[in-house]
Amino acid sequence: MELIYIFDDEAGRDTLCIRGDLYKYLIKVRRHKKGDELYFRAKQNLEILHRYKIESVEPRSAELSLLFSKKEEIKSTKSLHLGWCVIDSNSIEKVLPSLCETGVERISFIFCDRSQKNFKLDFKRFERILEASMQQCGRSTYIEFDTYKNIEEFVTKFPDVNVFDFCQNALQDYSGIKRVLIGCEGGFSDKERELLSSLKTFRLDTPMVLRSESAVAAIAAKILL
Image 1: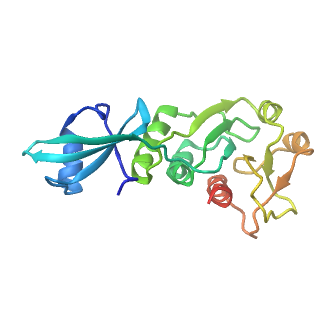
Image 2 (image 1 turned 90 degrees about the vertical axis):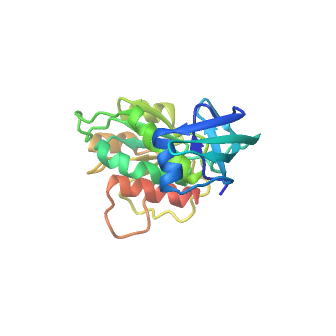
Image 3 (image 1 turned 180 degrees about the vertical axis):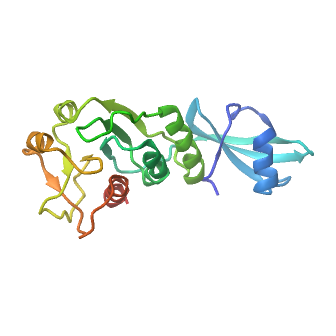
């Protein structure tokens, strides 16, 4: 399947020799054989897709030859920027693959009043999780990550943000939404709600209370899919 590809820093060369873990994965796990064709991308030039043919398979290595290379960027046709108040990294990591596959473009992590200050964000680890997801879903762009020290800093920079919160407005039309602010467990503090009072606020049409990561996944799906 053309969408599925493998990361390899040597992708683009006329020949590839795969060994080690990648050999085990492709030959032992996925059971590729001589004559099979595979797609590769190099992290330093993600927009280029390379198609290779397996020419030979040895006990510990396989030789592949380049058939062609072409520019083919795979990403969502819609744009979504999430402002996500910081929660436990373990919970973030569990939902990152879904957000990648859904097509989220950017996530800004915000240290809001109810975020536990001991939570540390490991963007390098987040990128490794994204890479595994990207190879499976075909996406050729990373989610952009950045941080903000508080909600005021974020909304000052992005005054057009829509706020997900407990309210009466169960949104039905998501077509015009490009940026959403989502709180952590427990929602926003009274001080933060006062700060956000002039912004557009909405909720999902459900009687259930959602965890922060569940809300993020649901909102991304509603807007992008």
